[in-house]
Length: 413
Image (cartoon, rainbow, N blue to C red; front, side, top):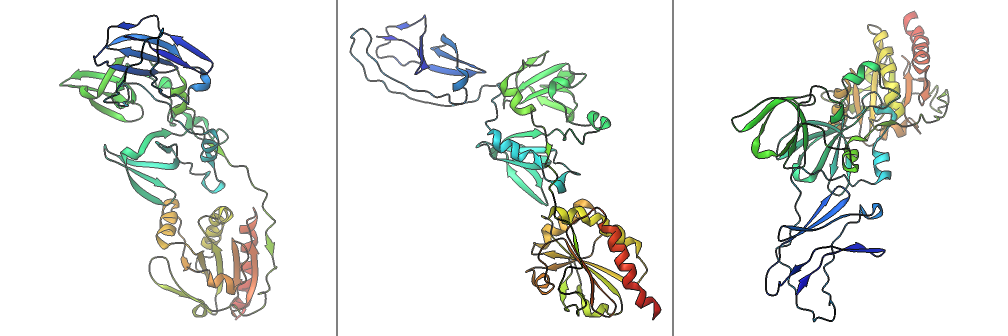
């Protein structure tokens, strides 16, 4: 009646140099500890095994219990009781995220390149979402992604990861403001290894009244109860694949797409009477085209998900400001999106833009819109004078020229 501990895979087997004798009828406390790239086995608090795990098996670690016959001895029944899986206090488990999913998530679309997300939430199953952490407690994480804000239970969140800005856009002055990996922070006196696997570098000021008091470069002033501290270090933990899985999150910019050339004077609506329409405005009020007869009306069909639309909008708003006080009306017709989503999108960018909600794209269909952004100029006589589809660098200049031309008959009157 002896206990041997065997560890290995199909290609190798290792038997510990120690064994426990005379265990018949007794309960045995067995603990398996996975630390970095090694597996340790303790039996009744005696370590019997401390072996490296082959690199090919690091993401496939598992346990198999087998009863065997040694030297012809009979096999006895074995009952496994109170089997538990727990995190080691102060230990850091690597994030299991597929390389393909991570690369896709870290690629910033063109319309977000001016405002890259600062954080990533990683779920236990490896799912990810990019955005910004607004607040966090021990129960909820308030997270904004795109135009929506969600309160997520903390037990669904495996990790919150700080994202490094895209290298091509990072400026020298930005480097001092960007979140740094812990080993690059200055004025660190202690590393707190917490009971939830967190590792907190800080400049300690005092250890008193059952708590550690100090400052963190990321979080500011801190008070950490002793009960939360698994161990205390004066030097950073050694680099490991687990640490790398949290620190190597570098955003990259999506390549600039080759957009089709913007098309002007291509609409069948040119010279025809502009179809009248009445739509609810975003917020309050209503817009009706026929009530603007005698003015030049600029209609822009757009959506928040449309990269070229978002890229062209600042130029359109600049043109709008340049004609302030003149008989020119601008109206942006959003295509089939929820009002709350559009409102948040505009507010986050601080756009001053009159928006009407073409909720089922019916008006776009009347105007023969085949792609967005699509801009239409309706003259003072109610006829379509100019159209433009797509985004171009000189789009704002061409729009200004077209509006100026459309205003000429109104000025003569």
